[in-house]
Amino acid sequence: MTATIDTGLSKASRSDVAEALTKVLADSFAVYLKTHGYHWNVRGPEFFGFHNLLEQQYRDIWAALDEIAERIRALGVLAPQSFSGFGNLTSIKDGDPEKDALPMLKELMQDHETLIATARAAFEVAQEAGDEASADLVTQRLAAHEKFAWMLRSTLGGR
Image 1 (tube, rainbow, N blue to C red):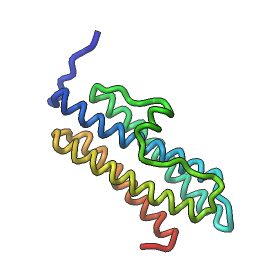
Image 2 (image 1 turned 135 degrees about the vertical axis):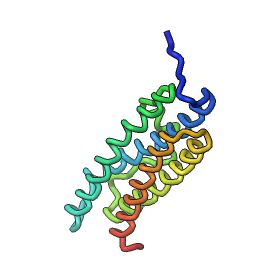
Image 3 (image 1 turned 90 degrees about the vertical axis):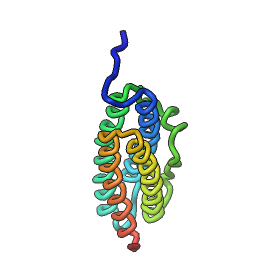
Image 4 (image 1 turned 45 degrees about the vertical axis):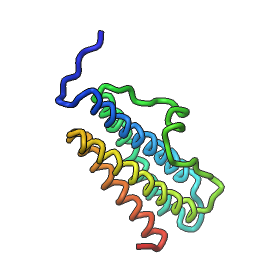
């Protein structure tokens, strides 16, 4: 038996927002995996600082994955749960553990920028649908990923 969802959003609006959030979830999961992998595999004279920076970031992203997936479920849509499902939805490429530390950080910075663009698109869909809860969630993720991109950019010597 399926219960009716009556949250003030139409089924079509909920579906559109969930689809946009699913892309945010997939890109977030891919950035999480890459960040955690680079945390394990980074090496060099600045290992300790890079290792800790990446740990802070992957822990935040890990917690956010649950929030995003649960929002998708609250909208009445199933969240993806397989590697292939995420792989088909994400714009983020797999990482290469053979890379040196600075190329790893540069790639992650660019991945956060990709994720920021995905989140901005989802924000527009949520805002257009009048879905304040999803828009708020995406706003929080935008702030986090903008901060992460800035931290990586600054670590690389940029502004």
